[in-house]
Length: 181
Image (cartoon, rainbow, N blue to C red; front, side, top):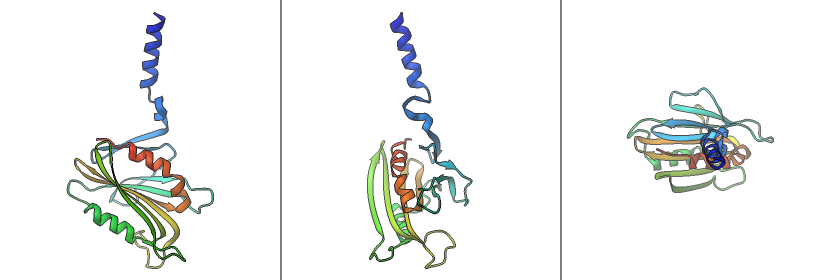
């Protein structure tokens, strides 16, 4: 009988939302892609009708401002190709002062059966809409993911001061691992 009680208690504990750190994440769906974000990423009002979700990424102590994660979903067949979006993100970064080129890395992974293209960029960020050429934010970074889902692509774009984005890298990687249909 004691064994049965312990077995039931174990099952209830493992299935609770607090098991495995689930209380530390918030869950969302975009374009049939389910994902979770870190508990300290505060959901913010979207600043554009193009955005489905927007999150504030707490700034690193030495950085002047918070970062943000924007999630975009335009529908089946919408939003442009993966390559066009990667090129657009790359064009939003100029080389840091004293550097020949903006730092970047592009990779493609299969995560839980989904094809995900991941971008990591650093330099002077000139990608904010309405920003005048040459008025970029120095020492900035981007972590982006394009998920090819069953109902179209979902775009995840984190931008912010370089240290803030670097500090959130582990949480961004956890976001990527949370992708499921």
